[in-house]
Image 1 (tube, rainbow, N blue to C red):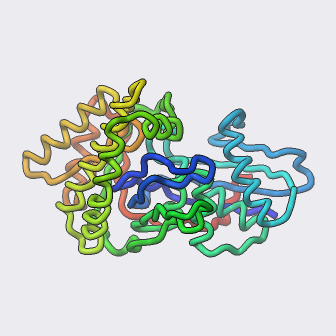
Image 2: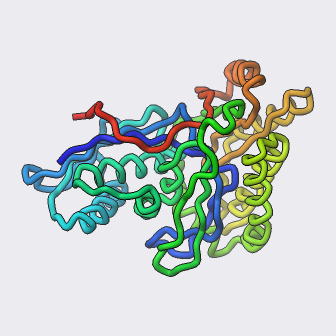
Image 3: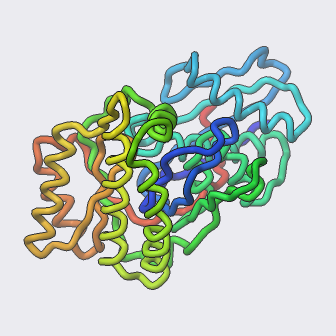
Length: 330
């Protein structure tokens, strides 16, 4: 009763920010993302009588407190489906910094959900797997799929119509690249979950976010399907700035940006002015992701690597969805 799965991180081009249901993780708005080939989590889950309680290790460290509670809640959902009370041992490894604004919870909970369901002998279709992963981390529902995915917000109270679906496979747009720059690998002080709740509660800008996000979704969806790069980049950049504007106007303020984040944004704008077409997007954290075409990826990556503000650079393209692996972690 053991299985291993790998899932890739995804970066939203139209962001998810704010929930209408905290427990089921149902979003206020739909979102669209690109699954990245270069950032991934591998997780092994084993259910057995020999495990007296759930034990979770991430990147070599045993987890406790709220982090452990989130994993146990997800395991409980799977156990309920499998009608078992067996405890589990879970070991997970990331090839990139976790909780630093690089969507490690997306890849983490997608990998955990697939590994746990397979370990307990459950055979679940991707739609249901996406809904299950969503309850661990909202954006995890998108990491079930490769390429480009849209998380449909839904309207039902039970979350039965809130799941991700694939817009296009990774082969659809191989020329599109995303350069992920890490300006700090430190875990952020305000987790996205808390940040969203605070923003929905008191940001005066939040209503404007909801009123304009449907247009962003339409523009980005069309840009992906028709491979319109300028339209994609322009819409994604504006959408990210609008999301952060809602955080900046909460009480107390939530400012994920570091001074290095601003420097990176300015650098992207400078490159664009120089004729190197590229756009930035930023999730709930300080890291800047640069959307560009593959023909410019090399020169952009080289320029970014030479900046004192940048600790690490990943050059990514559209990646594959969550999948099983035979490389067990224990």
